[in-house]
Image (cartoon, rainbow, N blue to C red; front, side, top):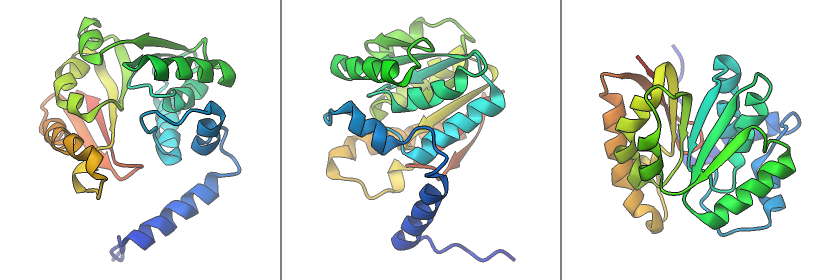
Length: 219
């Protein structure tokens, strides 16, 4: 019988350190270096390296041609995905509300040599996403203001092709010890998680990668 894992904080930190050390040499793109080169600190946090690797791996397995990202920030996750997508001819559309973040993302895409693979749309995702046609995307990654998660879900399912993959970051917010500034993000994520888990249109699971990633396939 497999021993139960000790999930104390120090143990989790050792797991994280081991994993990051394991992939440190072979990583083509790392969060710390990417952020430092940006030279700008006032932005919504980006995904961790393990989450970026997971996204790249899913793209390499599934090879989705039309990819949608909701929530660009400075473009780390989009760049990570683009490095995989360009290898098989995939393209990414990413949405960012903050013009300053969008500008930084564009610069980062150019610097990383993936600008031809990514189209960035500036504006409110709640206005942009409903405008996409049914079954427009093979893959959707959502990492936007968590208050929008439940609001966007119906349209995300609609615009995702059958067999397409839907991934949402920060799904473990409800059980994390977060700074008080994130308090308004917790209940929407809790509602979203239950909506996805009980959806008749999706098959899903929640993985403890980064701050938690819900991964779903449209039936």
